[in-house]
Length: 227
Image (spheres, rainbow, N blue to C red):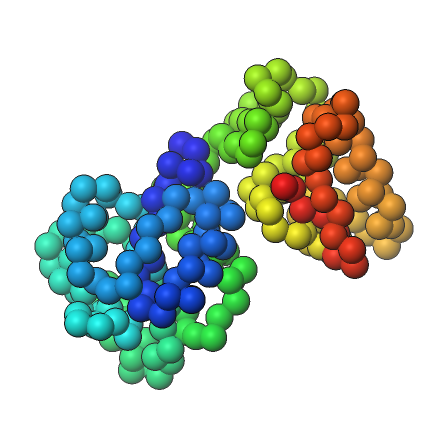
């Protein structure tokens, strides 16, 4: 399954937060549909069978945990993450008792939300993504093969991991420390930032030998992003 085939529903009544959640999850590669209330969500679930629900507790009309309790009573087992300002222990207990699988309190970090989404989908069996794509780049995570514009590109294991790291988080600036941990596993005491620069330059030459596609954009003082 490709990541953009995994549908996530977000129910959040604050439009600015809803838009940011949609942006960050879309940047992770997921298909995202947002609602400002629980109204019409059950019909959407029936028709589309999403992989995950992210639900605010403070919703107009039907409160978030009551909505989840309702769909659980009707047999829907879609994983649910509550994302709410209700941070008291008895409120968290109510969320889990109603059928929630995870609980995040506001304020929150979008990176943490994405990590929890990935983990819950992985546990539910929906996160087994074997193919990723961005622009004309295609990655097969099982065979470790990369294609650009339909042509196979020979990459080393490290180059494949580096490209994979960027493709799963497109249009997001990835800092050097994150790349060092994700691709080089920390790199040891003798690791230098120049190592990252050299690896990215070699990767660029392989996937864009004519230098006309401008996949990688350096972000001053941070690192790089795939655009």
